[in-house]
Image (cartoon, rainbow, N blue to C red; front, side, top):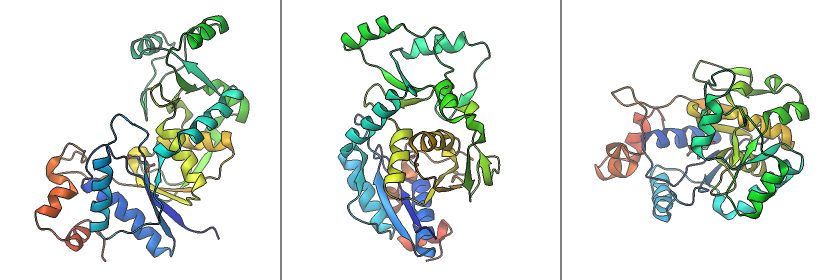
Length: 291
Ligand code: GLU
């Protein structure tokens, strides 16, 4: 049987709150119960929003919570070259294309789409350019040094792997609508999603998919807000011939107002909880972890 390896993968863009503690404890406890391994990965590709002080605080909060993890911790910002190489490989196969458009121009394309696109994991679904730029235009913009994003061409994806809606993954938790077991992905929720951002040349989707494969993660345990992002990850696994982990999406913690915790809820940061005198064990019990 495959070794059980899971991870907690926060982005150091703010302090950890109760929702993160629940997620980290869910993954850590699952690894412990399975006699497996637990990894911590810092998803810090957003170089403008990630700050070293948030990284330090995350490490301190998780240690306080009673977690330990294998060293070295993988920091995605140390691996841009690997992500860019993967995008180059996808580009060489015509699976991604350059998108020079501004947000406004993207919204204009969306408004001109034959059917009104819905919302996917990254916001409004982009069905692709109404008129793709000519090779001459594209070369001129590259030569001018204009910034571009890399978008997945869903048309090229279908040509390469066939109908993506036949791709499945094993869900041992549940999606937002109770999806569980062997579930088919929803390519219609993806559109020509961004795989390489204009600013950093990669994306959460690409980095998380490559890293989970590279680190031998057998079980991806994370909040159900990322359930539909799994469709993007599953397509990337198919294109890059990566192993497919088992997924366990867990429920999201909500406050008394029914809203999920966010980084802006200062009172619910682990830092605030710690300084209020709550012990780590009390907090674990409160979140339903009996150790
Ligand atoms: N870095 C992501 C976040 O902070 C989580 C990634 C994942 O678990 O797949 O929400």
